[in-house]
Image (cartoon, rainbow, N blue to C red):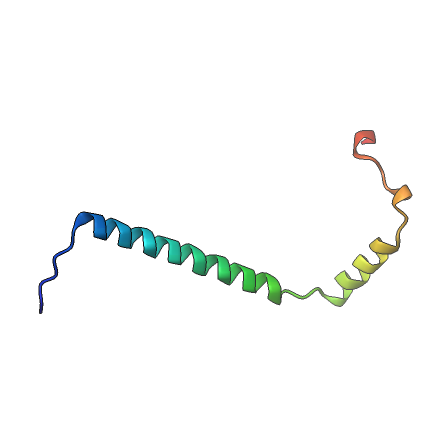
Length: 64
């Protein structure tokens, strides 16, 4: 097997690069998971009803 000489700066840069790639892959995975989520029919109906409701019926947080 061939010997490879590495400088500590090169190794540190490689470690930083791998960490950055890892973060990017995790973020991409999480983004894809969020895109794939679909609401159930019940949740879709509840959301539709909530959007129809008049905002004047809402309770102000300061009143709580």
